[in-house]
Image (tube, rainbow, N blue to C red; front, side, top):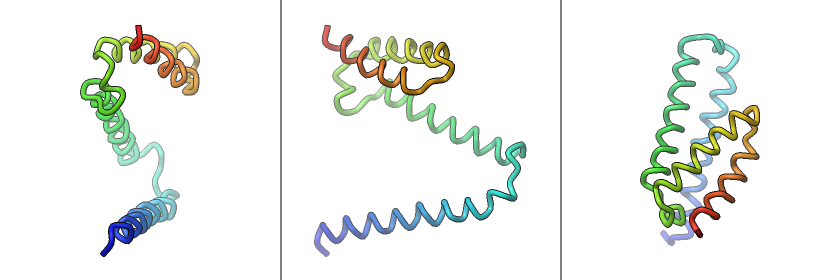
Amino acid sequence: MESNQIIVLAIIATSIATYVSRFMGALTSEKVSVRSKIFKWFDCVAYSILAALLGRMLIFPAGVLANSELIIRLIVFFICIALFILSKKNLVLPTMFSAILLGFLTNI
C-alpha cells in the first residue's frame, strides 16, 4: 500500500471510531442522570486527563513552547488562571493574553 492510501485509511478508521462512540453516547445519554455517580466519575476522569495534559505541557513542553523557561511558563500559567477567575470564567481573554504574555516574556 502507498503511504497516501495508508493515511486515508487511517483517517477513515479513526473517523468511524470517533463517530460510532459519539452516536452510541447520544443514544444512551437520555438514560444517564447528570447527578449519578457514574456521570460524576466520567467527569472526574475527563478533568484529570486535562490536568495531566496541561501539566505535561508545562513541565515537558514540545515544539516552540520548549524554547521558553519553566519559570516563564509557570508565571504565565498562574497569571492566566487568575485572569480566568477574575473574568468570570471567560476563556477567550486568558487564552489570548497567555500567547501575548508568553511571547513577550520569552523575548525579553
